[in-house]
Image (cartoon, rainbow, N blue to C red; front, side, top):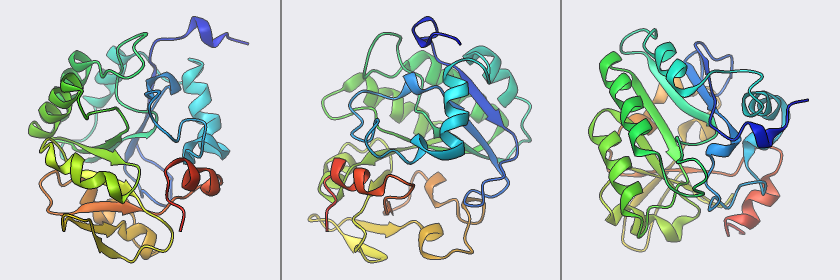
Length: 240
């Protein structure tokens, strides 16, 4: 068995057509577990990707038994159909500077964004990288959003949404408690709409794509999901 200590650089996998019922038949990517920033409260504490078949796949990518290097990953993305949908990071996060727990590799992210822009992909992602008082991460994420790669900042609960929006660098997605209505508002009056796929079982990501709209005037809310919902609720302070 491979020793993860010998495989501490990032690895990536592209599924050209997902069979996931939630996303629908779009391209999805998985990046190795070491891309996840240590600051993420869901890390080993309620992350939906930590269980089931997705976690098995994720671990294979992390162990370099499935997937490719970053450079090879970009080549694969260049082969995707122009204007097609891309859900980056169904598990894992953005490229991270090696041996740095919480800093985005801005050079890699810029190269990834350039490929997405070249192919005119409808690409979106979510990130738990820290952005408050972290100018390098702010600049990297803003550059991506300004150039066609929609990266949603992940708020752990409704109390964090206003501060993230005030940065004016990216749209926001937020974990909501299970009793939250379909539409709610923050203390500053910012609107939050629950993910349509969670309120209508017939809606898939490919049908919706709200998370890909970087200039939307509302945040997307998500009820905790997966097999570790209780852990996720506790770790993100979303108790009802």
